[in-house]
Length: 143
View 1 (cartoon, rainbow, N blue to C red):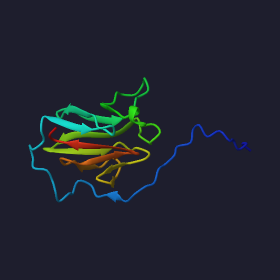
View 2: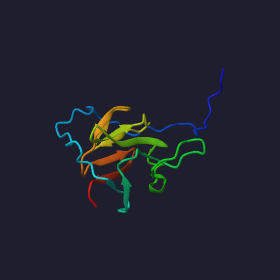
View 3: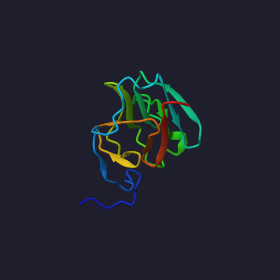
View 4: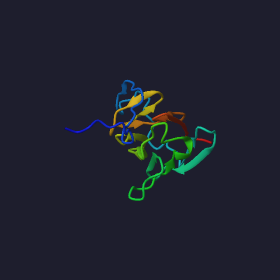
């Protein structure tokens, strides 16, 4: 019989869970082709990051050497301590709308404080708040 160990190095902490947000059936659907060429992300420390909207954006934290790179690295914002997964969420333009997909993260993704179901698409509008684990960023279409 295995002996119980006090070693907790492989324990995953799951932060408080909220209700899931319904998938892409928003009543406030974006107008097709209203997505700008550049998206602006306002980080927790107030800095602004500008990224092109024509490429997939992976949000997470510093990957291991064998992992694909992330576009927005939340490691410098206490991402690890606040429950951000290495490959936490994906943003991309799909059928004229900016969508977010939670990549089956442990501590979840929240859009305007409503939990997103893993691997489902959610419309992101100008001014949306995106919380990944315990790190919140604001997304804008204009600087």
